[in-house]
Length: 437
Ligand code: SAH
Ligand code: SF4
Ligand code: F3S
Image (cartoon, rainbow, N blue to C red; front, side):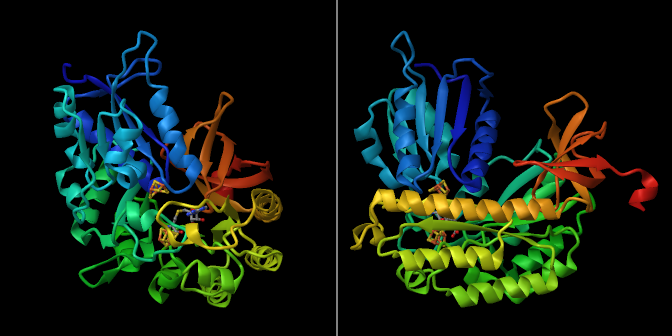
């Protein structure tokens, strides 16, 4: 087979997985390939997979099957991401269509693996050298208005339900200077907002600096308008980061702080290392310095042993925090994790009911939060065109999409008054200068 000319990358996972997808695309671009257009058959397909829940992992294999072309041929196929890491050689045993298996810490080696695969040699690389990949990736060039920047990878927390410590390896922080260089490249390439990413982003540290210090440093970039970070772990929510929410204007009033459950016995069984009370106190401290902050969370229903009473406590914490946004999931047993073999697995119908009740309650709070912003004046970052002519869509500081009629271009900041709230977005009207002053 000749070397592939065109590629397509499909990312299925979290924001870090999406970030990896972008970097793989840049790497292949620098290696002389180009991204296949819409409807065009790509010579190489990279499936950038997620292993977090069973459904996500299964999707990877059904997608591989679908890559067979009508004439019986197939593109070169690379299985990348967290399923690749978790399954390694196994993946090729499950599907002979897969030519390369490359883990999230090894994808800088893709060009070499592609050359080998094109020469008929399948390869598997799931090595986990600490942070080495970043040294081999090309510089960032063009960037969207809103860019991701991975600063911390891996996880040492070992929540008993979670595969991330196994698929992403031990917690490592990228060096301060590397991050600053990448941020400079992104801003030069057009980014106005940077979201710092890590599985435990608030555990980032380098040369005695913590995440708050990094944020303060980036806030001095004149052309950078906004800074966000995700995902934080409750036990790493230090005082410096909390006060940064009051002191750094460019740090957006949004905090994603997963709690998973509102019941202490379940949190203990999950090995979360925080309690309901310590979590609520953290939220209180954050709100004391930044009363308008939007809090978002992640929840798991049906963790092994979860009783009706435990679940009611989860509804209670939802009411106590009044989340602006949330992600909620049914517990999915993952191979190799301690929770998968725990007794008292919760039956599916019970999980279904709990999830429906939880999501209804979460929706009440997010609707209330969105309605609460109607009438406010705020600034949005225009990041895409709206559906109707003349419409643009921007993000509020609280990460809501706001639809406005304006000629303001993508990448610009616009002062608006929020005039209405729909189920998925807000509506706004641009402020005339006198109003904005
Ligand atoms: N590092 C982040 C995100 C982890 S994955 C954190 O610590 O919060 C994102 C979310 O997926 C988790 O917060 C959790 O709610 C959910 N999740 C993880 N493992 C899961 C499992 N086995 N079953 C169901 N949901 C899971
Ligand atoms: Fe998974 Fe827990 Fe680590 Fe988050 S903190 S990545 S949920 S083990
Ligand atoms: Fe999925 Fe891996 Fe992210 S398992 S959630 S893609 S870290």
